[in-house]
Length: 355
Image (cartoon, rainbow, N blue to C red; front, top):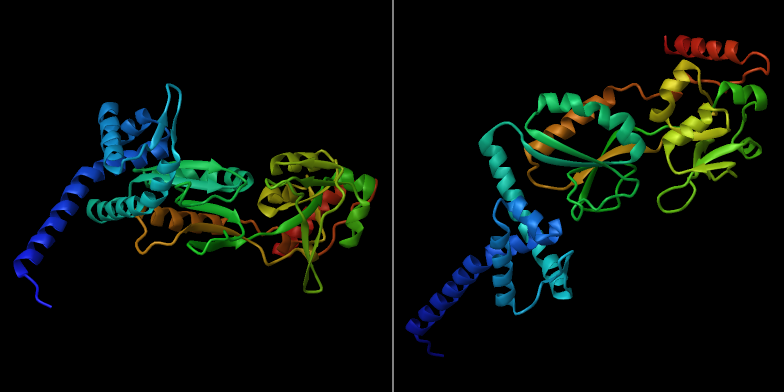
């Protein structure tokens, strides 16, 4: 088959010209479109991009003209994606995020000290008790990094929610996510000395059902199961609860007020157990196969701001003394008429075991 080199060369030049023209005309529109879709308004998108609102509007209108499709439904009160806009957003977003990531990584390599925005997600309890108190020291070390800490019981979609690092009780079910265990997660059954004086403590997992219990309603609507390890095998149960709450701080307060038994993460109650205001039992059945995990998206080159945060938080959390169960080698029992004396004895036993 004979071909005309001149015709082939002209066709190639035409394709390159169309690609060049399309890219130069469309890229600004795509960036403007992605920003409006993410921020939810043209005004916030303009602030984010550092340009005027009219410039963002013109870029999006030009893109709509090129595509021959309306991408946004706009009213005086809201800006929402059309069906065509949603499809275009899903197709464009991964590519734009890769470009932004590449730019961020090159700036990190070029500009020295880590800086930029860091979005963190954690459960309410772990975020309040463990992560939030460490933020002041982190900011002193890395003043160029701005932190946004969001507390939510639901597992986030790191890509969609633009989360850099998430703290979860267990791994996130996502093959694109790297999950690094920070520390084991101990679940302790505890009650106040006053409750123990009046009702005693269970000496076996089965006896829990005969006691007043405080339990938690999870974000998915289910009651939290109480987990144990008996004779080397995992045992899970959901006791009949007299009080149901959806926040671990409230559960801890209810336990301190003597309203029943509660099973809680060790980081929530270690201080109270050491002070003797809560007493732990069934420590010999504490499960040892759970953990607090630090999760982040798999990347070939982590930006410096994420890398230094992971290193900082890992060392800080592992330095905390959250291992309450290891010093509780026996089930605590407090006689009816001597709760205060036995709370002191419980603390002394812990100190002796630690020594």
